[in-house]
Image: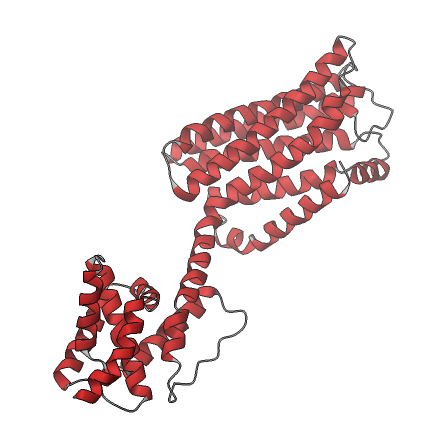
Length: 396
């Protein structure tokens, strides 16, 4: 792996961690919030300290060859523990059970983290190895135990979290299920990393050289796995927000036809100033408010006769009643805009009142109805109604 393959994920995860610090400050007492931030933090520093240039620098600063070995292994164990604890808190359940399971995993991995430097101190690793420490010292007393300890801890975490996520994914839907599926992929990659490393180490015990599994196969696999696991945990948290943003942009665009139609009048209102940094929902809300204001100005130009005829034409084409209602209202609004632009009133007071009442009833169920009304403007029935409406008006 290139050095950038370590540092770029570390930078990305660092940015994600800093961006979520306000949430950590607000929800520090929530174990789930703490677990998410700890996982992002450990993933980021694991990438940073696992980079060969960082390994060399740490070794030089401490004056101890291979000091980075147990340091990186400890960070990896902390990341593995963070995954387990986050899954336990995320899935929920009785508070006492959550605390007991969390403490159990924390205690187990704390013991592993304490054991790693202990083995390192007892062993002898005088030759600095930046990329193949695992296999180079696979047969060295105590260093061997250190390597096996961190690999077993990593494999246990990958197996348990994969099993938990697979079972949980069958019970949930939407973004949570997507996140769990992504997590399974990431944890399987972590498992592949651990098995590849352990296989290469065991091969050394029997005199075989399978170092390629440890030095070539494992590093990119665990790099991808770490990023995928982090994304999997973030997706259920950020997914609904992403969906809302996308939905706002889509609805904003879909309101375009109705917006442009209503803004063709000469006495259109001045638009409110929207800061460039405003989010899509704010822009959508402003567009909806302006559209409602313009529709209010059209009330004296609405003609229920136009709406009814467009509705009947839509029914004649076997359109569902709801679609026919929208086409009828869209035709009436379009004809009203034409009438207002031509300074003429298309219908009687009774027809205008009936049209206004029908439009209000159509839009009252919710903001999505405005989007449906805008999309109905594209119907050929609406275009036909706009052509015939002036003739009907002049005949009156």
